[in-house]
Image (tube, rainbow over all chains, first blue to last red; front, side, top):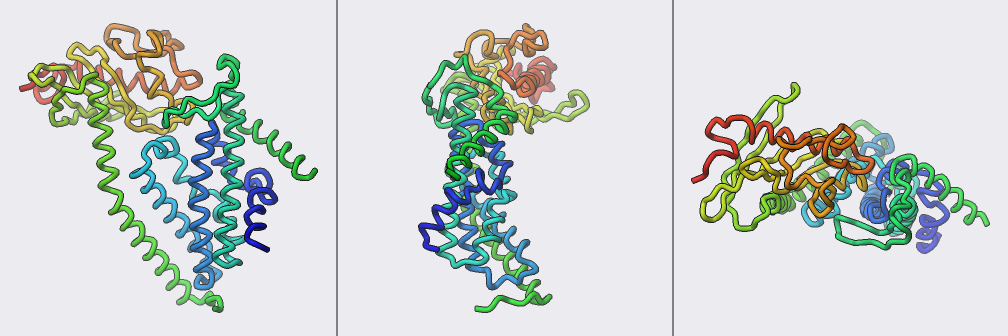
Length: 202
Length: 208
């Protein structure tokens, strides 16, 4: 499989959110707005690329019976590094996502890709898989955040933390608050999965 | 290269090496970022005090810790007495906290000597993004009299959310966060402004 194919595989054919249905917790939790979804996707992609790279480098050094604890240590260390770096250098984003960053450790996409791809493939292919799956996840989260933010508040890409006013597409008085809350996440996600799968199969 | 066998020595060795390497990496990154994080926190606090007191030309006294038991729980308040450059007492900034919807909600609130709120800022929170997390902006004065806490005195008005019969509109869909926020300020007011001071803490103390 060529590297380009691996990349597209993660974005379309094996999109983690819409097709593999992995990592539903951060998907539902962080997507109350498009910017939040986007930042969470990028943070996850960072960890995913590095964890895929490291795990494919050390895959032959790790005995099979202890591979899960070894991978978890690698992933948890990467997430902690990310958390410290974000807290020190981008405090604005950290303030928005602070609660969700440690949760990247238990995101099953990352361990799932480590097991399913990085442990069987060479480092270069693993990096491409990380980028592909990461982009797929980021796009799915941004799309879901966009839909929820639009239906819930009538404005898109608004972020108080970065001082972005956002685009007003409809009057704010028509916002359906439910879509920003948890039930709206499930409803929007369900419809998006249905639509994406319809398009994908067509 | 062939995959290592799952023998006991191999497993113990590999796990130890991975743990040691991960520990070393984390320790070095921590050493690198800790001063920066501390600086950001200190800057945030200093900027926060200026913001909640509504003035840049201030002297901030050394912080004083005060603990009190409220509703069976021990609360810690950090009090920063503030004077202007001429040494006149401007009141104090109080760091107070309460359990919000998602965890501890830490508020820095500025009182003038009579207990009227000069300003506030959220120092730390774990509220829902897009909902409770809006507390930092919601209660600011530019949002109108019904929403703001600035300029109000918790002792002279009904300092609860309108749902509970109070004078302040809660954040839409975040009543729990709003209650916690108001409670944090109320506690600070009760403990720091109202309670007779013991001579070492309190806003009514005249600064040098």
